[in-house]
Length: 310
Ligand code: PAF
Image (cartoon, rainbow, N blue to C red; front, side, top):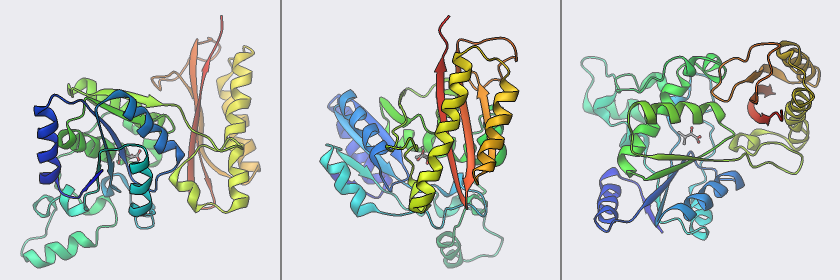
């Protein structure tokens, strides 16, 4: 397994694979890999000759006051896990490599040296302003996007850049970040990226908590408490299966329950799979329930798909 830090080195290897007509599956990550990520890599392994995994904590998708600074960096442990799964390339670039100096908004008169200082002090997207960016309108502004303005533009932009660098045939994403998956599928389709997008179901802890790198911020007691989000999703799913179509009431009841259990709930919503709002009192065949809630300072998200039998 190769560990590559520069775009030029990555491109050399990719063009060799292309010349040999080898197919490439790609798993983009921000590192701190857990079982959920590893299952994406195993899925990628089954679909192509070559598996590339990127590890890059992308400042462009973090807002001011979010956890960009403290996002765990565990490259050594991550590469060991990837090696054991038969990954071929780990691409772990620096922020400078992905967002080069000239791309930053630099106030007039700054010297080259102060530009470099500015780059090494990047804490979130506010310092990366002169980049071309991919905006996926509408869908990026609801749910997660409403609470984290600019987040999905940051995600779409980095994923598009990585696709152009890795040139994969297939890319694999986890369904825990459901809205992210919808945003990516949409720009890939609309901008004609020649990449087949696959998704992998959420991997959960024994107590139902969706696996996430951010679970590492939780205490053992909070990890038990956090499973209540999934329990609320399941409760709504049972009601929907029983024919309840009072979506607003179901959302409201779950929202209040989570708050009573000590969460600061951001949203809990019932949506069509494309994230449009279902019409109350009109049963839909497929729905997805999405939630975001803070436990202490940690933002947790989860979702559950429901297929109603008719
Ligand atoms: O899901 C993630 O880990 C990130 O949003 C992604 C897709 C790697 C882009 O930075």
